[in-house]
Length: 363
Ligand code: PMP
Image 1 (tube, rainbow, N blue to C red):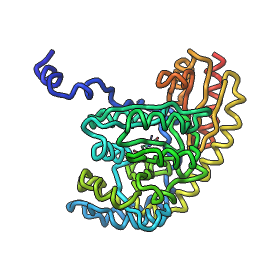
Image 2: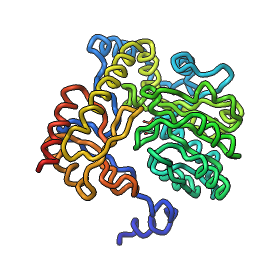
Image 3: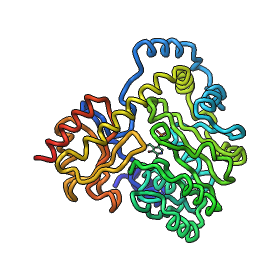
Image 4: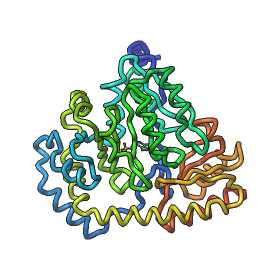
C-alpha cells in the first residue's frame, strides 16, 4: 500500500469508501441505447445558429449566478405554477445532491421506493445520510401502505418518488403521490426526469403541498450534454436550498445553449414526439422476440424487459458483440432478475437492437 493509499483509507469517510462510483459503460462504436439520451442531434441549420449565439458569450466573466433568463424561459416552457421558486442544477443529479446536503446530511434519513433510481442511495451516502427503502407494489406502482409504514418507521428528512420511475418505466398514480406527501412530515421530492414522455405531472400541484418539490431535467429531451436540471417548489424551500448551491453551478455555455434550445423548442418537441412513436413500436415488437419473457408499460424513453433468469448477462454481452449497448438491471434488485433496459433510439437503431436481441437470445 502506498502512502497516498494509506492516507486515503484513513481519512476518506468509511461510508464513502464503501461506495462504488457510478459506472458508465464505454460505448466505443456501439449503438448507444443505455442512457436515456435523445437519439437525434439538432438539425444542421440550427447548429450553425447555435454556434453563432455562442460567439457572443463572455467566457472571461462568471456566468449569471441566478440564470435569470433561462429560468424565465423554463417557467414558461414547463408551466411552472405562479408563486413557485426555481433552482437550476448541473443536471438534476446535482439537485439531488443539493437536497440531500441541505435537508438530510448528518445522519438524517433519505427514503425511496425500491427498485428506483440508483443515485438516491449513492448521494445519500455521500451526504452522510442514512438510506431506507420500501417496496414498490404490484406492477411497480406506489404502495401507499408500504410507504406509510416506512415513513412511520424512519421519519425521513427526504423521500424521493421518481414519476415515472427509473428503471421500471411506469408512471405513478398521482393520488398515491399526494397521499404519501400528506403522510410525510419531511420533504417529498417528485422526480419528473421523464416528464416529456409521461401522461401526467405533479408540477401543477406542487404548491398544494407544503412539503413537495418537483425535479425536472433537460437531459431526456435532447440536451443531456448541457447538464441542466430544474427544481420547482415553494419559495420557503428554495430560499433554504439556495444556501447550499454553488454560486456558478451552471456554466455560461450551458445557459446560453439551453436558452437557444428553448427558443427553438419545436426541434426538441419533434424529437420527443418521434421517440414516443418509436417507443410504441418497440413496445409492440419487443414481446414478439422469442425469449423475451416480460415487458412493462413505459411512460419514459426506455423499455424494461425480462429474459430467462440467469441469461441477462449473456444477452447483454451478445448485444454488445453485435454492436448494441443497453443497460443490465439484473443484480440491482431481486425483482429485476433477468431484466435489461433499452433506451428508445432512432428507427434504424431500434431495428438493429431488435435483430441483435433476437440473435443473442437464439444463440
Ligand atoms: N432522476 C432520474 C429518475 C433519472 O433517471 C435521471 C437520469 N438517469 C436523473 C434524475 C438525472 O438526470 P440528469 O442529472 O441528467 O438531469
